Length: 373
Ligand SMILES: *[C@@H]1O[C@H](CO)[C@@H](O)[C@H](O)[C@H]1NC(C)=O
Ligand SMILES: *[C@@H]1O[C@H](CO)[C@@H](O)[C@H](O)[C@H]1NC(C)=O
Ligand SMILES: *[C@@H]1O[C@H](CO)[C@@H](O)[C@H](O)[C@H]1NC(C)=O
Ligand SMILES: *[C@@H]1O[C@H](CO)[C@@H](O)[C@H](O)[C@H]1NC(C)=O
Image (cartoon, rainbow, N blue to C red; front, side, top):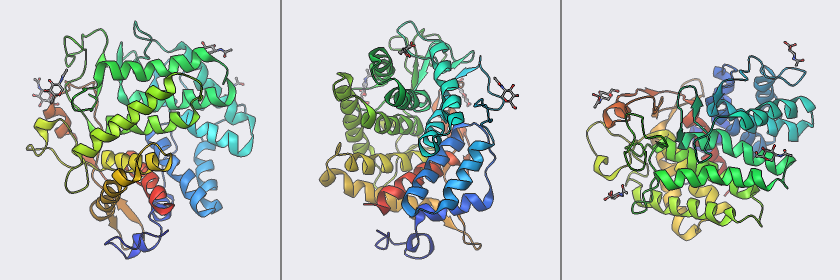
């Protein structure tokens, strides 16, 4: 279905927003690195290919991955003793190519990452450190999307009977929930330090002080990746679904009247000087509502209208049509890191980027859902 009812009924919306965005990135070029930003964008190419069947999306994407995966199944310049969950995100894309082609090299490359998971340092309760050496004993919501979606997909595909793997994956989500979720607001802080020594750590919970939209978005999207592959008989499945639906309810409540979401979502900062409606988080939440409906996790009567409102904002505010037929994606904050002091001043001081893959990718995911409704 085309998005003809939306106000921007020329150009992008009259064509396919998903395909137009994919074409724009092909035209501009994307540096082929193992960074999770690229991997997030490439998820959009999987969907562009699924939607259109046009081989150009698959072949461009495969070229990007083949620049990193060597014929013997090692990953170019892979650091075997650098334990950064961010780098594990690539495992999802490797599995995609293994499923699609059956070529062993993709499976081998994915297994490099799967083995690295086993060696990754953990907190006292078993949570993966976000990065060793930089972030000891810290779990960030971001890391759940980076490591645990892949961990679950790998387990489903190659190790489904390994109950300790499923338990281990569930533990990552349980830890995040126990330390960062506020049960009144339903929102989750950016992360926590189990050793409570980080400058930003709450002395009781270890939690970071603020709710950062993109971290919540990564977490929300990861739940949508693991729930469909989770064994029906494993007890954590119900909990994960509850984590997703209760977060969705909190997001519905915190959606701005414009249809978007604030960079810093804590109530006292809504509308505060320096705060703004941020595009990557807004795209992730819009997508999450739509996919949640498709998977039968969310009630269409409650969530479709907010999702459409969100999507309208994405198209009208953050997509800019260029003279050369490409589109730009605007309004995505470059980064938000707990290497900082975790303050409001820090988060609002980070600049915005144009055509940031971390926002454009989720826009493509949301577009896929809208275009296939
Ligand atoms: C895999 O191939 C690359 C590039 O040809 C080479 O540098 C590397 O040593 C090989 N690794 C193994 C384990 O064979
Ligand atoms: C099962 O999963 C656990 C936890 O990830 C892992 O340590 C173990 O090696 C896995 N077992 C097999 C046979 O792969
Ligand atoms: C949860 O959020 C509410 C509303 O902002 C606040 O009053 C309460 O103190 C928070 N609870 C915790 C444990 O931080
Ligand atoms: C925290 O860092 C920001 C810059 O990132 C700075 O503006 C602010 O003053 C710092 N706050 C404290 C309490 O150190």
